[in-house]
Length: 202
Ligand SMILES: [Zn+2]
Picture 1 (tube, rainbow, N blue to C red):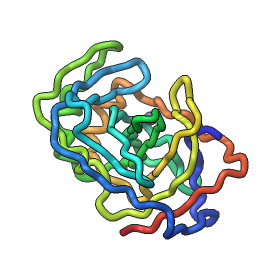
Picture 2: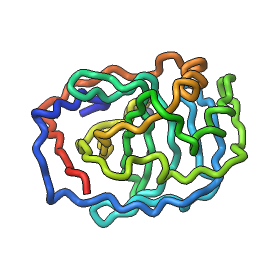
Picture 3: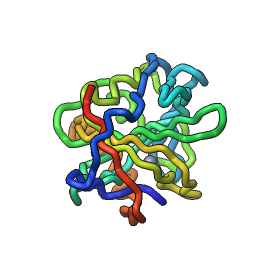
């Protein structure tokens, strides 16, 4: 029951009864860290960004990047993938996956990509606040399933929501990441009879 997976769109079942994600994201300051697996941005304020899902509040802990994408859609990878990792008071984990394709720059991430620490273990405080709502597609269907973290210890029981519409970042932005992590994606894992649910766009 691990992640990532290949999302086979023809096998997804639409579920309009699955609860909506409600966002309370706000602009805030972040610390950027090279943790040896990825580049991770950690909000300075603890409870500044909350996603409510199924009546439970999940607080954003950090977001980070993979290149190329970890999730595939019908066997195809995107250029990169952003993971926004949230945790509830009970310790349950909800991860939002955002596929990133090369295109227009994401200006919300200019400062982040300009300051990526190349050295493992190094941290920098970003100068420009980031509003995490600028990182998530506004109007996208999602694939929802239960999986795991994709870096050790690959803990299971993680609720995944992968947006099917990609966001864009510029080739220059992506190259600042791939210069440090040319390939930090985990290969897709077997589905083992798990269902992947399609949540239509709002
Ligand atoms: Zn990840």
